[in-house]
Length: 349
Figure 1: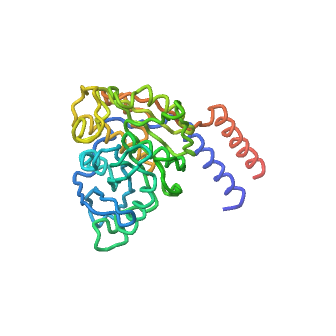
Figure 2: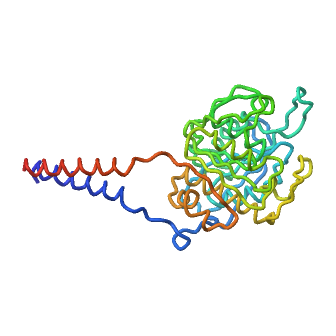
Figure 3: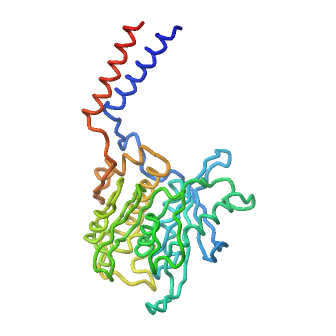
């Protein structure tokens, strides 16, 4: 093969690739993509996070030990005064989509606010991720050899979700952060339920400088603690896309927990109309698929979250923003350049 013919074939391949990129995308439908759990079995164990002393429950999918499949870690930051045990159903269902889910209890004393109790903080994230990496390398651990140590996602509820948003922008804001905090390089996305960034001291909503890290806010339509209006205001101030506001009809502030108004938590007096188990499944499914789309580049999950899912799920509405893509005229301009290159090469043959 001479040099000219090689260049012609390369240009034809380039042209073909451009045409494919501007063609009609294949849309995932219910017939081609199952948006249900990927793993039918999930195991769990309770432990102490040795790097910070947090008691924690860890959930992980049970797959074939010969598959060599690695699962990203997700840290679920509980709401204030909510014990980790009340997230067992949600965490199990998220894990069934192919994640190691860590749910810690973090007890603090904040005399400035006359507060003592369970309260999530940013410092937990690095400590927990460091612990999980160590466990993945410990042949006696149940997590040995199954963790993708390069990928980290965040989940959060209420105050824990506020911590997650703070962590995503790499901030250390008292009292959500008591020590210096450095955002882990592995952190790739976050999905948070019943969360907003209204600052009670400034009496305004705080922008989230998410530095391109994808964020989903999942919101109950009947949340009387963190209202849908507050979620929308927070969503609008998330600076970078992709981002999504996923509203679950009939769920209140505790649609994510095993029971409504778990003991010890500040109650939501707005009664849900969506059954608790259905609310948990819906919130878990959308959160997990958002994380799969952005941690695992799962095209079907991405299509579900940002396109087809709201049509398929009668309990959900979605507002989403994606990264800007080139205008069609720009793509056709590139195509014209490629065609011009082919003509030039033929003339030189």
